[in-house]
Structure formats: structure tokens, C-alpha cells
Length: 319
Image (cartoon, rainbow, N blue to C red; front, side, top):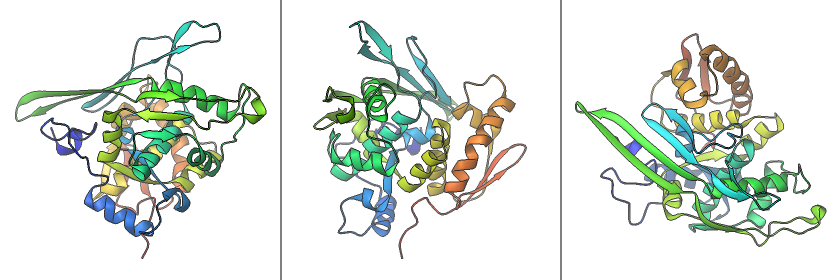
């Protein structure tokens, strides 16, 4: 297995969990320190956010999978399998719940940013999350369709889910398989006012599992929160957020122009489509707002796929 694949879930290349995972790789640390003044400890003030590298390689469901025992997304050698959280409905009946859509993707960004900022597995859904929601244009309101109500629901769906990442590839003429399984969180505590207009998540918290926390710190991707806010304003979907995260990761590491075929893109982003051409049409629709907000990304559309050329990262280093 390559070193890149080995660290997907925070494991070493030899399969042993790192004792003290680095907060950032040397290159990422240099990049962040140049992007943000060294004496400033709040990256949110500079629009600097982070996302775990796993979400640049595989993605969450775009729609609710419903009452099924598991859900899968494949990308080349990697396959993400997700078991749902067990939740209680209004009648007290136990039901399954998968995280899906835009909210859990934004929540994962906040989790990664907070984990990098605080170096702590316990994340408090208080002032930091309020600042994050405000920056991304999410209204702090309750009610059946309010952003806060949906956030509370998706916190429980995401925190209670179990992820299994399977890496299968041919190495030196032999088939090699590696599997890592983690719970997103070991627990959460949510407080809400009974009055919809005054709903608040303070002093609620989510405690990430050690494995998931380590996977974030092993290789966080720097992203621009202003870009995510712009995508929200342009009504960007979960797919557009995934494309943005993927481009941020690729441009951080890209050394030469590379063609990504439509078939490969469909594997990662488009398993809901029976035909590649249907996926291509939807992908191009969601790519447009991404290239508007992240206009520095050099992306050329061709009949064969997307040609990516080395480009500035979403957070340009300061001189």
C-alpha cells in the first residue's frame, strides 16, 4: 500500500497507529503559517478551514439512503462503507439514520477545523460553531425546516455512524487488502430550548473517536471558508462541496497536468447514476459554481474527462 493510502484513516504505512500524530505535515505547517499570522490562533478569522483527506477521496450520501443496513461509495482501490446511526423518532421507535446532503459536509469541515485549532477530541457546539454558521450564511433558527433543527438532526446521524474504509490493490503481483473501521464520535450531548425562536446548541458537545480524530490530524486539507460561503450563496449542492474539496486536495499536491476520466470521476462522485453521460451532465452543472468561487483552479473540460493543471491552492500563502 502507498503511504498516501495508508494514512487515510490515520494509520502508519506499516499498519500501526501513530502514537502522536503530527498536527500537520511539514509542508502543510509551512503553508498554514504563511497563510495565517503565527500569533493568531483562530483560523476562522482568516477564512482558513480544514477538511479530512478522506472526504477528498470518498463522499457521504447526497440523498437519504433510507432504511438500509449499509451504504457504500467506491473510488478506485478505496471503498467506504457506512453503517447508520440508531436514532429515536417522535414516537420513541428506534430508527436508522444516515448523514446526507449539505449540512453534514459543512459539519465535517467545522469538526476538522476545530480539531486542528484546539487539538482536542471534545468539540463544543457553542461560539465557534455559531461563528462558523454565520460565516457560511446558515441561519440560527429552529422550527421544522430551520437550519439549527436540521443541524441537530445531522449531528446525531453523523456522530452515530460507523465508517469502514477498505483498500484493495495489487502490489508486486499480489493482492493486498487493508481495512479500517471507526466510529465518527464516541458520544454527544445536545441541549435545545423548547422555544423554537430561542433554540441554541450551547453548551452542547461532540466527542470524536480517537481514530477519527487522528485521521483528521494526519493530513488536514486547507480550504477557504469564504469559498464555501460563496458556494452556499450560489446554492451549491453536496456534490459541488465534494468537488471543491477534491480540487483543493488535488491542487495542493498536483505537480503536472493530469487527465481524470469521466469513468473515474463517476466512480467517486456518481454512483447514483446508471449512465456516465447523465452523471457528466450533473457534474458539469455542479462544477460551474466551484470554478466561479475557486477561479484560480485550472480545470479544462474535454470529451475524455477533466484536465487538471497545477494551480494556486484555495488559501494563497501570504508574502
